[in-house]
Length: 353
Image 1 (cartoon, rainbow, N blue to C red):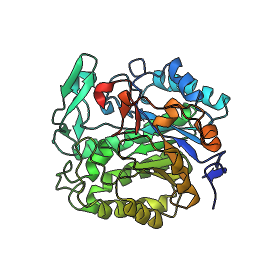
Image 2 (image 1 turned 30 degrees about the vertical axis):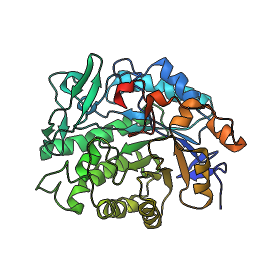
Image 3 (image 1 turned 60 degrees about the vertical axis):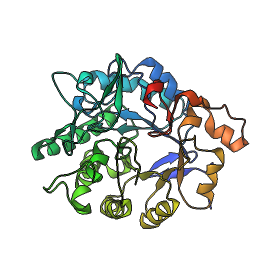
Image 4 (image 1 turned 45 degrees about the horizontal axis):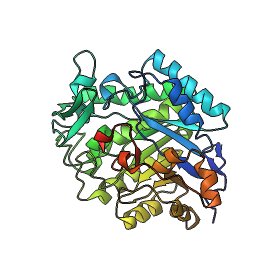
C-alpha cells in the first residue's frame, strides 16, 4: 500500500505527497478581500500535497463571520490572485473552499439590509462572533425555490472566479452545519417541497450545487466536503448513513477530484462510505476535539483513506509533511485558541471555540 509521502495523481493534478492542509477559518481578510498576510500564510505551507483554503463565501449573503474572504467581486478575485501566485511560486497546489454559511451569521455582518438565509426558518442555538462582541443567531429567511436556484448559480460563478484567480480547483463545503449541510439535516430542513422531506429530497441541493460546479469548471477541479452526523452548528442527524449513502451514490458518477470526509465518532460509517465510494477519499479523522495526531498517517497505509487532512498541526508546523516524515519534532498547537468543532484547526477569535 502507498504511504503518506508517496505522490498521487489527483484527477490530473500531481501531488508530491498525501498530506492535505485542511480548510481553517482565520478571519484575516480586509473586509472580504484577501490580504498580503494571507498570501504569506498559505505560501509558508506550500509543501502540503494540497492546500484547501478557509471557507470563501460565494455571495455577499453567504458570509458567516467577520473578515472572511469572498469570490464574488473583481477586487476579491484580484486579491486571491496574489495568494495563488505566492503558493505556486513556492511549489504548492491550492483549492478554494466555497462556503455559504446559511443561517450561521448575523444581519450585522451583511450589506444592504441582507439577512441570513437557510433551508428553513430555524435558528441555530448559540452566538456568532462580531467585532462588537457575540450576538445570538437569528432565524434565517427560508429560501424560495427561485432563490435556491440562484444560490446554486452563485456557487458555479464563484467556482469560475476561483479558476480566474489562479486556483487549481475548488472544494464545496457541504459540512459542519453551513448551508449545504442545513439542507441535508432533518432538524434544519423542514421543507415539504422538492428540496426537503426524505433523503433523496434533502440531498438535492448538495447534488445540484456539485453538478453546477462540475459543469462550470470540470469534475477534475471539484471536490466535495461532507461531515456525516457532525453536530457542529446545532445540527442533528440521527440517521446519517441513509442520507450520505444516497449523496455519495448521486455524486460518484460525476467523477469528482475527491470526496473530503470529516469523520465523526463512528469509524464503521467511515469505512462503509469508503467502500461505497470508488473515487479518491480525503479523510479528516475523528480526534475528539483534539488536533489530528501524527500517527494518523497510518490510515493511508492501511487503505482507510487516500489522503489525510491536518488542521491545527499545519498551523503550528508550516512544514508539516517534512516533520511527519521525520517523526517530529512538532510544535504544539495553542489549545487556548483551538477551534475543534469546525475545521479542527484554529481561529483568531477564541470566543468562537
